[in-house]
Structures are given as C-alpha cells and as structure tokens.
Length: 143
Image 1 (cartoon, helix red, strand yellow):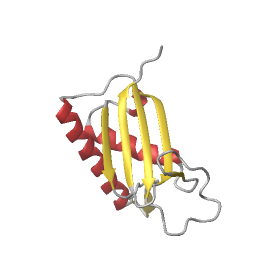
Image 2 (cartoon, rainbow, N blue to C red):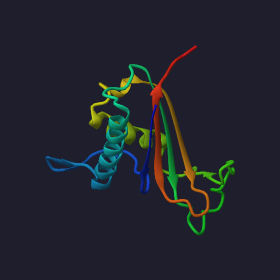
Image 3 (cartoon, helix red, strand yellow):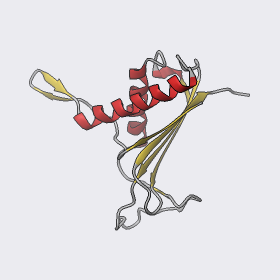
C-alpha cells in the first residue's frame, strides 16, 4: 500500500477554460497535481514499486484547516479524531479526478479505469490541524 500526505489546501479538478482558440488550465490545479505526483513517486521509489496493481483501491481524505468561524449548519457531525464533515464545494468527484489525474502523471498506472474501489472524504480539520490531502492506494481484492 502507498500512503502519502500532501500538505496544503486541497484543490479539485476544474474544466479547462477557453479564450478564442486557446485553452488553459488553472495553475493552482496543475501545481497541486504535480505535488501529489511527486509525493507518490517518492513513496513508490521507497517501496521499490514500479507499477500499481491491475485492481486499485483508492482512499482520499481532503482536509481543510478549520476556519475561526464555520458557516452555520456546516459542522454536521464530529468524527472521533476531532474532525468535522465538510458538506461544501468542491464536489468529492472533482477532488478524486484531480488525484487520479496526478497518479496518471506518475506512470504508476495505465489508466484510472484500474480503480475498482474509491472512497473520498471531505473534512474540516481538528482544531489547529493544517490543510492537506491524505491518499492511500492499495490492491483491491474481493472475497
């Protein structure tokens, strides 16, 4: 299993914008994907891993630092570790898309079709916890 923690505010995938005939992507999105890819490559190198298994389990926890004032109604349920679920934008599928695109940049998998189990959680961090993206990748075995 590969586990990495990428410091910094989680960033989600956004559709490329177009101006005339030119297309461009959000620089923050690209930078965050590169940070994720670099962290995963370092972890894979430490483990001697050259490729991910054919069937992948992917777990993503996007943690945002808790603001001084949380919008009313947005602290839904406390988790055991002091975190709170975060029912705000971005959507979980866009968080997952960016992480899966970053994994694709590493060359560790042929395609994100290898993901057969996906779990994405968005949370406010515990008091004093910094923003980050926690990623765990392993082989998905049924049975």
